[in-house]
Length: 235
Image 1: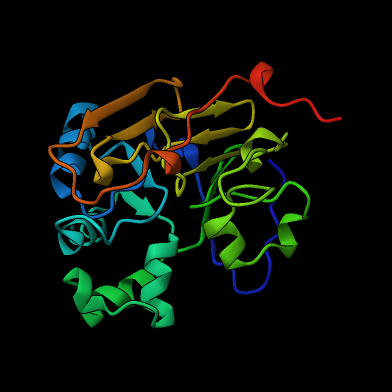
Image 2: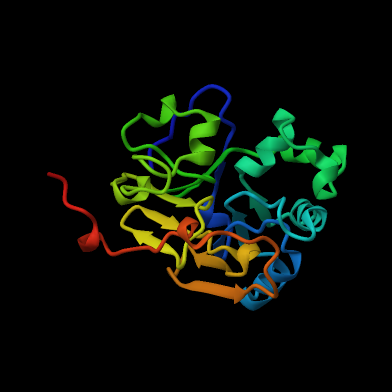
């Protein structure tokens, strides 16, 4: 993949995919340490494997601090900053509300907004296909969802046609969203759904069910993925 250009202020890290035996991309953890540990165990992750989380390690679930400690203490686990991490950096939310210390927040501030590897890009929310990547802000990459309003289609991943594949979270899905150039992995663990991982090498999904529901979410805010041939036809 050609070198990607990002807007000023968008921290980006390029990962050498050839340095890792296996690479797994994991959806929003939201403080669900039990499920995160179970998923890593089920994947059989070793020191030779890389795990990349799509952001939102924190808030809503029972152990945000535990998840942060697990990620920052593991040399083979990396994450991008999600919008829930960003809320601590902007002062919208206070660290103690999620059991975090100032030291945790300092670590969060050092995490990139985007990670690229091979022909893929990992961000929390997504990209806007209508706008060059180098003109998209931190907020764009963390919160982009619908290209219309709210949860109305089309979603950005229904329109994005490459050239790079985007792995993303942010939007709770009833099942992973799979497109030619996008893979959505937030399957709502903290809302009683699942925590899902995608194998970058094999294309296989692995998931663990949530032990309990930590936060209620309206069914209307869970997106049901559809096949491309089911999408509305533009007039």
